[in-house]
Image 1 (cartoon, rainbow, N blue to C red):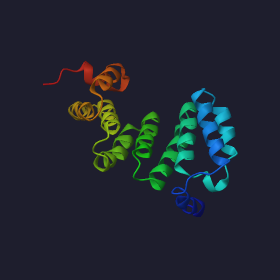
Image 2: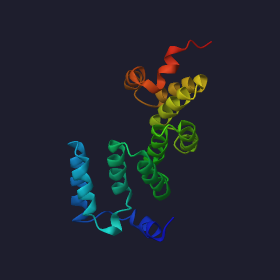
Image 3: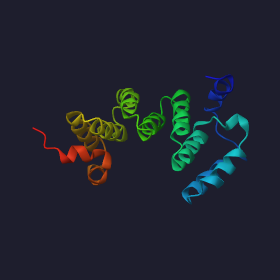
Image 4: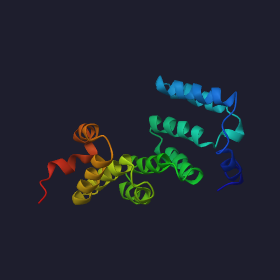
Length: 176
């Protein structure tokens, strides 16, 4: 971890003040409107001391994800896990970026510890089901999907799962 990141790990605990909070909210607003370029411009206006704040990194991750810049998104998510290990979002985003780079085995390995750390998180269970299905581990995929259904809103998860191309192998195969 660089010295700057180490120094800003302390900033993570501090709330973002004005005018930096305004720029962060503006960046989030631009993303909601679908304009990642303007969101990026707003993030550039944030003081250096807050650029490694988890809230800022989450917006940065979203920008890179929307641009399909998965290597950069992975780097940001890796930083999120380091700076805020008790927040499941960084773990989820890091694995998702790996999966998008067609490194699904690594995504699986990166997310498994999060399942132990956050055993009640339905998104982690759902994503593990997706990765297992893509890795042709259909029994594991079924078990993780069942876990996600138990943990979250079963109706919403079922509707999502039926449409999810990552889970297609699970639904196409008859299991014993």
